[in-house]
Image 1 (cartoon, chains in turn red, cyan):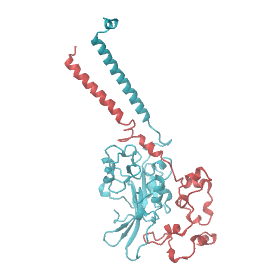
Image 2 (cartoon, rainbow over the protein chains, first blue to last red):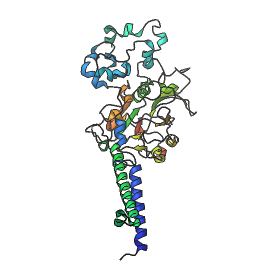
Image 3 (cartoon, rainbow over the protein chains, first blue to last red):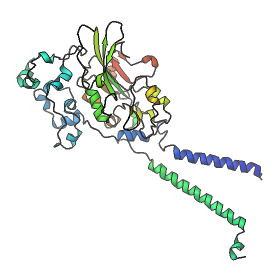
Image 4 (cartoon, each protein chain N blue to C red):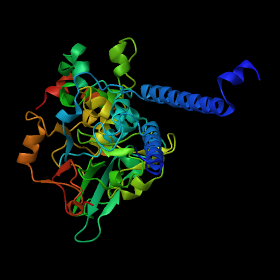
Length: 149
Length: 261
């Protein structure tokens, strides 16, 4: 027979262990240590945030010939949403137009204003000295100018 | 003496009551745990996405960057970064280097509104743009200081924040040697670039890479042998920021100047 002075403290220890395990399972999230010292669930939570930019592939599903148009032909390598803004709404519902259609000088200047921090091979112009009273699109949106070498 | 006291003595009755209460409490907590665990049950990543199959990284060609700031603007739009200035997940810096002097580094509104033209083209020996973002360090100091395990390096190599478990203590913001973290006043948690995790798990590019008009930013998967990142690493002289800290960043820069910090 195990005397009570042995099994009583053992019972108390067991109870403490059970309480500890219970409390631990309550406070430590279920997916903790699924991948490491963090909540495995949080990956899915972060991945479920809403997307705004549809990506060029989605645009090209419908607008596959857009690159033949003047102005667009020079910007073939640029993603559509760089200028037209986040457009997932337009992909899901075509009647909802993309947020931006910039044609103003300030927009062109954002990339093409001469700045000596820019790579020398990148086409740049001092906008204030390049037909200052005319809009860029008057010349740069015509087929004639685009075909020039 | 009534019938009841014939069945149980006072002592026996008290014992029975205590035992049944203990049993009930035990069962009750069991049910409670079960409910709690069920409410925290795993939500799932997009189908076919296994985080262990990837190792995401980014490459930046400094020689291509034109400093248009579209990356920083797109990042704010995609990730709902507070619009008022000085909170950025990614931003563009302009370096103006003159000899061995300290370089002049400017980043007005993260480069979103463009950069003013320099005063004189002769004044600086060289001048260039450097896009910055979280370096997604392999051994990141920010994850080591987090007291709650809310920030971590995911199995696919992205340093992320669990916004539900971040207590907003700001330790990680101080620990980051690249200044890539900020305290989001809207969520009251730390915040930073997570390589647009919601996009890359769906096969899309991060927003900054998507909108970069000159392809200065490229996104890659080190575990995918067909990823373009391998060619980039092989063909260029690649550097990382602050290599002396041995945090092993996964944002690789080509054409980086020694002035860049």
